[in-house]
Every structure is written in C-alpha cells, then in structure tokens.
Image (tube, rainbow over all chains, first blue to last red; front, side, top):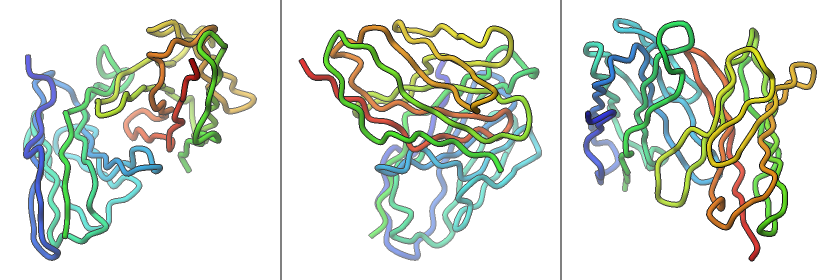
Length: 116
Length: 110
C-alpha cells in the first residue's frame, strides 16, 4: 500500500520552462489537493479536486494548472516556471467528512522544485 | 472567507512545562478542524481532528484541543512537553477545501 506517490522528488528548471508534477493515490479517496510550502508561509492550497471530474482554485492558483485524470491521479502543471514558484510541493488526498471514513489528509513525500 | 490564523510564529517552553498553541479560524459553516505536526525534514502527521460532538478532542502524543465556537478558536494543548515535541505545528480548517495556518514553531528548552 503506497499511499500518496508524487514524482519527481526533485527538479531544477530554468525560468520559462514547463513541467508537470504527478500525483497518484491508492486509497480510493475522493478528494485530492496540491499545496506548496514555503518558509514562514505554512502550506498554501494551489488547487483541489473534491471528486473525480472537478477541480477548484485554492489560495494561490496563478501560474498553475491541474488535471484530475481519474480518481487516482491529480497532476499539477507549471506552464512557464518563474523563480517565485521555487518551493516544496505536496500532494494530498482524503475523503471529506461524510464521504468516507477519514477527513485526515494523507500527504506525499513532497517535490522540491527550484526555478533558476 | 475561509481563513486560519496562528498568532504565534515561534513559541519556546521548557521541557516539562505546559503548552498551548493558538488557532483562530473563519469559516461559513460548521468547521472541520485539524492540527498537524511537522518535524524538521519530515512530512505532516495528523495530531487530532474535530468534526462534531465533544468539543474537547484527544489526539496522539498526549495532545488535546478544545473547540470554542463563540471564540472561533481551536487551541492545542499539552500538559507537559517533551524535547521530542520540538517541531512546527499547523492548524487547518475545511471540508472539501482545506486550508492551513502559517504554523507555529515550537522550541523546547532543556
């Protein structure tokens, strides 16, 4: 049981390059999330998907796009990377209260992205 | 609008002393509230959660939190801290959309 798997774990980009962060969960969760973590800023929600086929903006969506490919997979794309997007990115999944047994977010190990 | 405020960026307590970390939230409906802990270089671990019912919630590692609707607060407490509790603590709120506070870093004096 792998839980939440995200790739790549590390990536260095040049300004203007594009890339996609992949995330997959094997817990049959309905909801999936992308957060970024920066020192002193906590975790900020980029996008989330409450169920397969839906996506919604979070707190800091600018410069990002997402795709909920199926119930298991939720990808985050940077179309034109900027130095301000240097961060650690976390994917997470859960079943919200009333939709399953948890409510607890299960996190991937994180992806450290550096944009030069 | 949904928001979470953790007023204290850093807190230092002596080992064996009691601890209270503050969390205030803004949410339009009945809130679902969480406390997570992150040790240096590690991922986030759920300490406890509140969905409904008893407003005093017990969690792992001896932590508890109390939901006070009138104060829009969900403060985390521990009667006696251990050096291993040094970490960053995050309060979170939401149901479908879950957002986090900026965190409180806890330092323990020997």
